[in-house]
Length: 156
Image 1 (cartoon, rainbow, N blue to C red):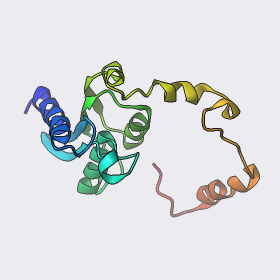
Image 2 (cartoon, rainbow, N blue to C red):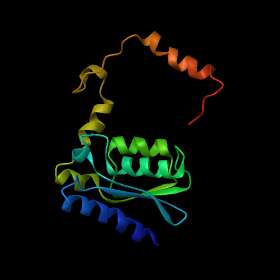
Image 3 (cartoon, rainbow, N blue to C red):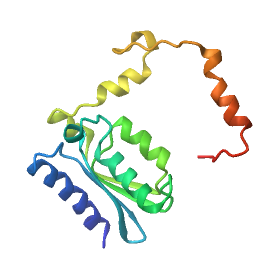
């Protein structure tokens, strides 16, 4: 199948999701070696899970199916440009390439505006719309020290 066919599948998942009233207008597929290894659709409202975006769902499905926490050698096709959360998940999953169709501006026009998140990231903790405050910074280093000393850790 071609890149256009994989994108058509991601867009079809998004449209099916809307028509079934299952969730938002987003779909994604993960492809490796010419085969779909993971699919996802926006299930935020269906599962009451704010992290259940199409890309995250597709990454979870592909990783489960491949038995790996990384998507080396995979491509992600998503019906819309990823939001900041999905972008972070994509970078952690490390696919070889990402293809998207709609833009974040297209999404914003119908109420899915994530621009405020990009602005929030740049703000000092105390100026964010949800304030952040660091507590017990020295104790917070303890898990990292244990990780660094562990002989059984799996790097990622």
